[in-house]
Image (cartoon, rainbow, N blue to C red; front, top):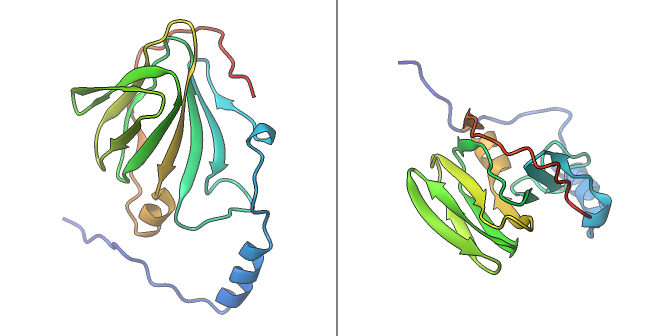
Amino acid sequence: MSERTFLRGMSSDAYDLDEERRRRLALPRVIKAKDLPWEGGPGHWNKDVLRPSMEPFRTQTLEIHIESEAPGGISHNHGHQNEALFYVLEGHGHEVHDGERYDWRAGDVVMVHNDSVHQHFNDDPERPSRVLVIKAKPLWMFLGLIQQGYLSRASKRATGYEPAD
């Protein structure tokens, strides 16, 4: 078995924390969600609010995005090492976490524990669901815990749905 590094050392002649702090403080504090594009589809959409792939990235420890499932939509069956918190903004549906079902509706908070294989289901055949997803993914990735992906593909219903802004 090979050794794993859980915390990487940091050293740099070019990285100045004072300069980085000034750069981050100069970034906008309000992000207009209506100005951010939806990505994905046809059944599962993301709108990135704070994600490491965004430049300039505004936080080193949190990733926050909005997810929308099409009416009757199903996400991929997937897992990630970091925990996730979902605040349900609109709709009703359920999750399956490690084979166990959890029902949710607007106003609920759903916790996905680390290393849980899970899938999201929108149970409304008429309207999309929307959830705000909050994770400490950048911190977990910094620690070298980088398993962040899909495990298998769920059957998708091609609905032609596109989320409204």
